[in-house]
Length: 291
Ligand SMILES: Cc1cc2nc3c(=O)[nH]c(=O)nc-3n(C[C@H](O)[C@H](O)[C@H](O)COP(=O)(O)OP(=O)(O)OC[C@H]3O[C@@H](n4cnc5c(N)ncnc54)[C@H](O)[C@@H]3O)c2cc1C
Image (tube, rainbow, N blue to C red):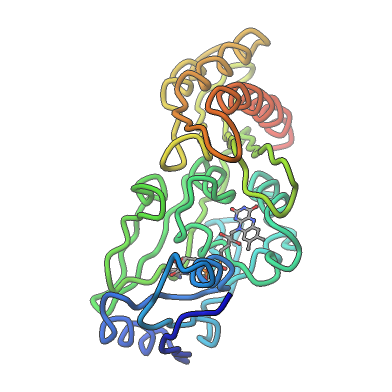
């Protein structure tokens, strides 16, 4: 396998990268860790005219947390750095759940969270937990900056709401609400080197034993990470019982829209959605007791 020919740029500033992206036009691709884009190029699924690498740009690799505001993950912050961040472990355990099961150590050392989102695979592991946490992405172009809810970012497999000329410079994750808990779980045949055929992320807020708010996002069972609105409505405002959690699993399975492919059949995926939904709900509730 050989890489096709392309021009390679290593800008030192964000403005330089944005200017290059505009100048090169269609056919120019951004590269962060390269763990998705290089694989696609090697398999001939992508033939960029030019590749603009972000790794040498100062200041966009940071992960910053403030207990007043929340968490910001820069464009070139690596997955491995998420895993070792004490505040993420404490305040955003569902994101830690996701990065722990993602890929293998080599890929986690190179790959980025922002690259995982921009690649827009329906199975992207960081998407469900980040959507449930109300994350907002920052998209920067030569014209300025715009913010977009991550919920509105995914448009189809490999398709996003990003415009030509834009770079995702960071993702912002608000502080979790008091008495809230989050969880992310996936099923994978070959842990670490296989993408998930089904996953679920939950964030739920509790008032006494009532679920006052909830977000549920299903991965790999629709063209985009899927907000399970019907299941959320079933849970919201209800007394937290074993029966409710059971019913939520069935509803989420109904709501999912999986296909059959080499990884799993649609029927099996639906069954797994029910199982994963229930497991994340149980864990979210347990975790909410610590907040
Ligand atoms: C062996 C292996 C196992 C894997 N396992 C998993 C897994 O379990 N779960 C999972 O979710 N993924 C998995 N992946 C996929 C991949 O590792 C992740 O999606 C990773 O997070 C991608 O990050 P990156 O920085 O390498 O992205 P890159 O490859 O650099 O970029 C990915 C895409 O996003 C675009 N892009 C990147 N950064 C930006 C930006 N700042 N602004 C605009 N566009 C941008 C690029 O142009 C490209 O289209 C695996 C990959 C391999 C090779």
